[in-house]
Image 1 (cartoon, one colour):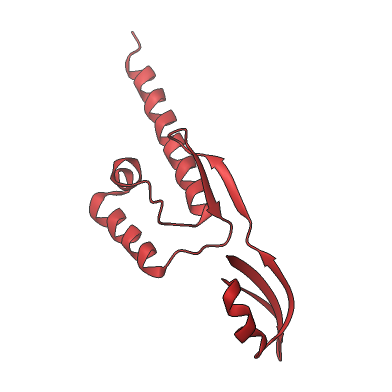
Image 2 (cartoon, one colour; image 1 turned 90 degrees about the vertical axis):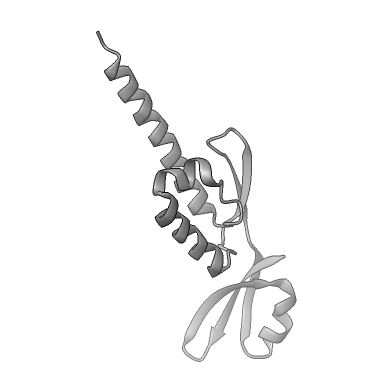
Amino acid sequence: MKVTVKYCTEFGGSESTMDITEIASFSEKFKIISVTQCKKDKFKSFDGTNQTFAENDETPLEDWQLLQYRMNEEGFDYCFNGYSNWEEIKDMEFHKLKEKYLKAMEELRTYIDKKSNKE
């Protein structure tokens, strides 16, 4: 389970996200002030399914780099609308923004279709 740890250093307070099993060794180095479980948030995705992602990003750097590579190689539109739903990206803000993008893209397409079919 991922937790957010608030702790003191010689320079002041800070916080970090880590697995709960890491707290014991971490507490040997720093004075822990509080430990809270990472929140999860649910939202309805563009395709109508419910999705849950951690508030704190737990995505490995390699997955972000792969996403960036695919955006450049496949094109921005197809990267998010056809190539993948990017479930391996565990960042809630990313998925919210992606869903807003897909919705706006569909609304714009519908608007243009309506305008182009005017008589």
